Length: 450
Image 1 (cartoon, helix red, strand yellow):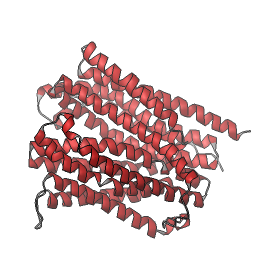
Image 2 (cartoon, rainbow, N blue to C red; image 1 turned 90 degrees about the vertical axis):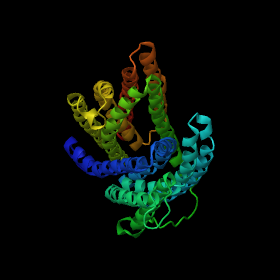
Image 3 (tube, rainbow, N blue to C red; image 1 turned 135 degrees about the vertical axis):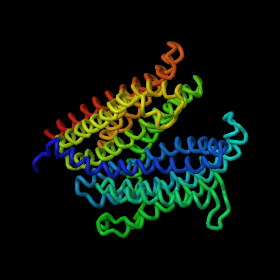
Image 4 (cartoon, rainbow, N blue to C red; image 1 turned 180 degrees about the horizontal axis):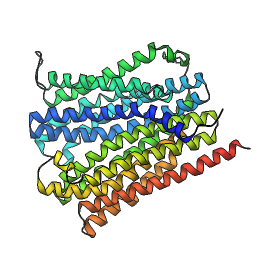
């Protein structure tokens, strides 16, 4: 088989990445829609939604990391054209993820009882606690959805999940309209209505994707019809060896950004508002690049399954090139329009002035963030996750957070100092991930030539 050129790798990765990126943005829009509709209830319900949702998201990123283990293992099996193993990966992964979903339901229920210890206003906690409990039940259908999605994406079918997520946004808007505000004869449930609507969305997504996979002829060769012959402890261990470090890495990364927001909150409300504007703009380009990273996991995994070291390197480094190029465009946009973009959010001159400065740092942040997220994706394609987990903890919590604190409060640079810490931590992770991929892929080539 003739090796693919870099151009061919970029084209094939793009075909996979676009639906994944659109799906990621669709997930973001679910949260945006909830905030917009809950905001009509007033300040306290919106604050309660923010508190409950922030804790839910921290738990969610761990779940996403664990569930993502199915993708590289499926891609490797597909690269070997081993349909039986791909089916085993899915069925055992579904068992693991469903068990995880049940545990997270219990965890969020217990977590809601500790909200009073977080020093939040009592009227906010009263609303946030039941909202978080309702949201917690979403974890079971969500982990089932992730299992089906990651399985078919590992087989390079990325469009079905995208379509379902886009439809789910419509379900969410309708559900919020009915349950929050009490339309169509239903009682007005307020913030709890938003929680029930989110649960409805996750049930819809899980059922829709499961029905599609179980009925589609394309997947029958993998026997996805839940014919569990036995509990395959060896495969479960493989899934957990990939999933748990990935989940921990995601948790530490998300936790570092959350703590950075806390530090900026120490500076003042104006700085925190400016930070929120800059980070929300950076999150859009990040979600698109995350699509490239997930596509790269699939393509690197396929190449590993075929035993082609040259293809592993080409698939990996072409994806890094794509990520850097995309983030480069975003970086230039942030610099050129730094005085205009913040005005889309707010007309407060003090907030806009700080946000425009942060967008310059966000430009540097983009290049590092794009490289590190794709770097993690290509390493995951080689099922290398434990060392990257330690790299991430070191980069974000040993380099990034202390640098942010020193520059912001000791050197007196304020919110700009916190963002310089972002750049330091993400750059450390980005360089480390790329170097590790270079070394592992070189060893893979050397092992294949013996």
